[in-house]
Image (cartoon, rainbow, N blue to C red):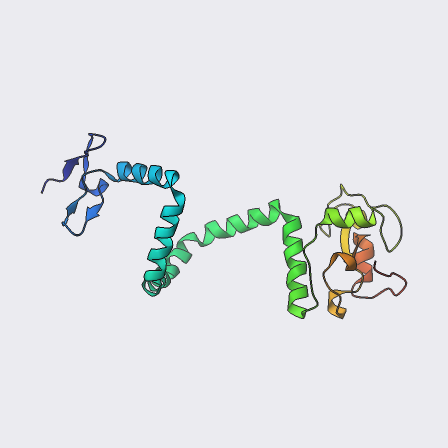
Amino acid sequence: MSEYKTCTRCGQTKPISDYYWETYYDRPKAACKLCCNKATNNARQKDPTKYRKQNLDHYYANKDKLNEQRRAKWPEVYEKTKEYRSAQQRQHRKDNPHKVRELARNRRAKKRANGWEKYTEAQVLELYGTNCHICGDSIDLSLSRKIGCESWEMSLHIDHVIPISKGGPDTLANVKPAHGICNSRKRDKYLPNDETN
């Protein structure tokens, strides 16, 4: 068999390695990989639900076999993509600090089974304003919150009125805005004069 073949769709002569192999007939397909992929993508765009159903049907019919293949390949794939995934995670944490903080709060509350709900810092500020609930002074929202950065003491921190470690839930009713330094000094204490709404 020759090492080159002419594609029936694009008319280009390409090496055999550029063709998918038909195992039933034990020969390369008539169209090259590029043309086959284009045709498949066009068909998927016309009727995505049909292809999604076919993929799901195939997965559930061969679930054990497919999972076994994935598990066998995982150590090799993990090692190859380790650095890339670490860089992606670092970049995500840098680009989305509010999401990282939210996940950390949720994780702590779930671990202690205190109860939690989804809320945003914008909702906290809208509900309680931009004054520190501990000292009463205004909070500078433009400052960096990272401890150790310049002027972090006057930046916004979200304080749990009843600390999570003392059984407080991670809910909008149990959080208020505070200065970074006030929140750090308060630590896990409960200030009884500060009632939640």
